[in-house]
Image: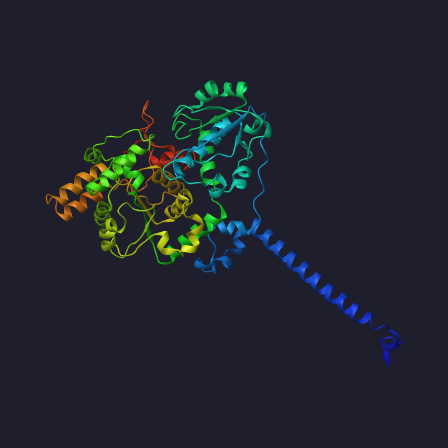
Length: 503
């Protein structure tokens, strides 16, 4: 068979080896695939450059994507290449700081931030903190079960050197014993520089076995205060497993409309610790008392419940919370997410709340049991899910001003002073008792409740400073004002006379 080419050259196909024809086709196919890949790569790079130099060019395109189909903000960032890591800070380490955090998730979170500050201030190498496994909750979670360890280490490496474990020569296996101590609570920079730093010259490794509130709220250098915020808001990131499920919870709630996160702190440990038994049966009050005596680190044993309640030191009961929510103007259509563990008294104590607000949900009712299986018996991991939902909610209302309420409040301030209604429990107890004994009609009660809380909605204000009484002043992590505004705008935002009166 002959084939005539454009140059009238005759070629005989039967002279071409048959095995060369498929190979030639394979080469053509391979060339086309490579060309396509190269073109798509160039296009993606071009779009990335356009977004970098002229981000508004692509705004029209992204705005056409429905909000519900977009991944959450943190997930959007993860779809792109991660930002370059900061250059490590070069310093001569004075020793190793090992810390064992105590308390629940949010108490430990604040403590971790403070321990990073201590390591930075004293030029130490920080070992990834150990979490509390011996408290009431008996949660076996390690740091890496809750927080992203690699992100924690890498994102802060321009400030402090963090390692996952001590070098082998400092391990118990080799007979080394670290010097253990508890720093003085609410201490300032001078204490750590003068009292703690010299210990590292002698011991090389110092182990802080308690870490709660070991750094002062005030009187700290501005750059140190801002580093506390950076650790809290950027350095401590939950694990991908927690974040994925947390975002799912938020998305499901948001798809149904605005929602309130009610931190209903009416749980067994809180009631036993505080000695608050208002609304409990005699048998329940005895059970709580026995529990209080069973834990030696709960120092107060004999507590007058009603006296504490009148002082505003007890969490609101579910029944009291129901009346307060109604007085604040929330109606039956309000979607309420209960951000807490098991309520003491279970459904019996939630009956009035459910009757007034039928759209009450919890993570256990929203998610499939299989999705929560990995978090069961890990109270801190479950609390992390509640933390994410509380921060994302349209309104956050805690019934007790504890560690979670304070840390969530601070996060919501950082995100633009999102609405957080902080109940004045002392005043509310007075109003509730007057209403329930028939002295104060409903309309007057509701008006009084709203008036009491007009300036307790998460508005900007200055932290209240009480010299020599740090425990009674405003908590840094509830209102990190140094990180919320810049320069003269700060004065315009909070004003010199706008101070806190929270209880």
